[in-house]
Amino acid sequence: MKRQMIRVLSALIPYRNWRHRIRNRFLKGVKSENRLNIYSGQVVLFDDTGREVKFNPGKYSRIQGIVNASNTVIKIHESCTDLDLNLEVTSPYSEVIIHKNVSGRMRVRLSYGVGQKLHVGANTKCVGVSFILDENAQIFIGENNLISAHVVIFGADGHAVIDRETEKVINGVKHPLIIGNHCWIGYRAMILKNAYIPNNCIVGGGTVVTGQFNEENIVLGGNPARIVKRNVDWTHKNAYFLVNQKEIK
Image (cartoon, rainbow, N blue to C red; front, side, top):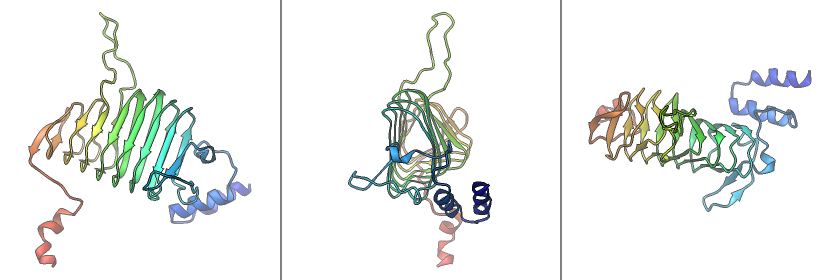
């Protein structure tokens, strides 16, 4: 009854981070599949020198999930205090490394495989992205990227496609999925296994990237993705204010 009352009262608090802190403080020891067993070393923090530092469950209360795998490495830079991270890691020998100043909302699933890797580069902002890694998939995200809401990045297909004549699997993972530096991934885009997106690219909303591209400074659009514009760049700044900046000054 007491636990239920604490949950009800904390739900009335408008600030999400405060709600998590209160629940962690007063419901300590309550078993929940949404809480990490952080004291067993499943999740560790690191600083700019690479040195591991103590995990503070109150400060990083939005890092939650299930980690149930042997020989797994999950390392998060200590600066990622604004990261809303949900982990589902059940594959052995897997690795998740999230670098400096990564922020936003992120779901990570490493299941149904072995030796999977996910690296997210520094200063990447994720409005709402899911990383799904099955089989032996690997995903490497560069630095200074912007990933919009409802984006899904698949390291593998998840289910096998078999050639009926040869009885061979024809849709296995062949290459790591790589997104370069300073890329903008649009709303509801989908990036599929083996894809390669170079530096300084834009992936339009709803685009499905299935292949590898070698040109930088391009816009990708469509399903499957194709180059729709070349020789472009992008910035976090609002287009209206850039166009009207003289008047604003």
